[in-house]
Length: 114
Image (cartoon, rainbow, N blue to C red):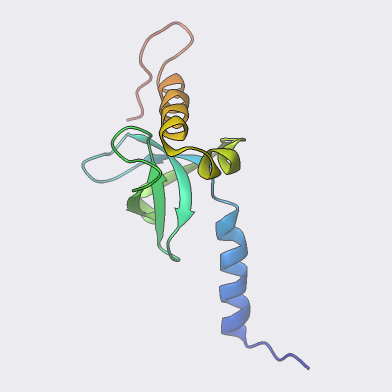
């Protein structure tokens, strides 16, 4: 018989929910990069997330960001699994182009996140 303690159930619940965050678009709320748009590619621990922008922060070296400093949106990059498993250079370019498209309004003016 398997006996679960409250702490085990909490950790298991956290890990299940954390995996669902991968691929979501997020915006930095604090730090020198406030207002920057990122894509979540990993969950490091309960408080930290690995994010990329495809330019300076790439898939092979994601930025470690405190979860409290991010605004996580409901928008998700659908092909994130394929991008994470594919060729790194082309995946970074694809992520950079997705983020670039998000930064501009339909009329071509730059979208302000702050």
